[in-house]
Image 1 (cartoon, rainbow, N blue to C red):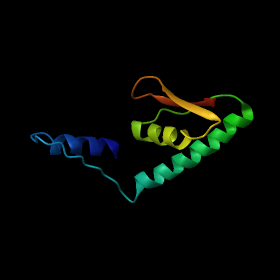
Image 2: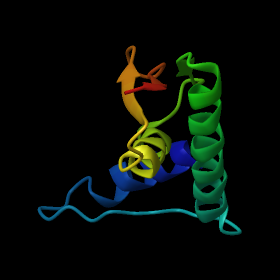
Image 3: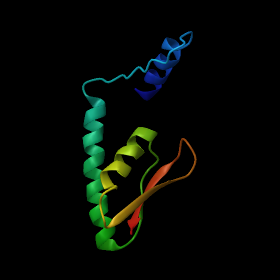
Image 4: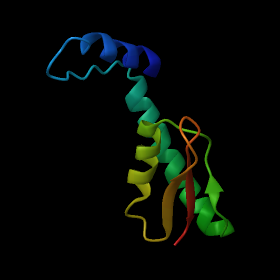
Length: 96
């Protein structure tokens, strides 16, 4: 879905002076994925607190990493950061 969206953005903005953003979604995939990531972030935050060990997530695209960071941003017990190079950047959740 991301690849099709990327190619669509290139095609739409190819000869355009003003950038137009194309967002593709099918059967609410993006909102469902966001809900899943929010639940994952909260569950892993609790796990980090219990085990007192950092957790490194699988590589994620920028949208998914942003959801994890935003979800845990106000959690006073954990901190997040990203490591690695695209397309293999991973979110790390650790104790503050």
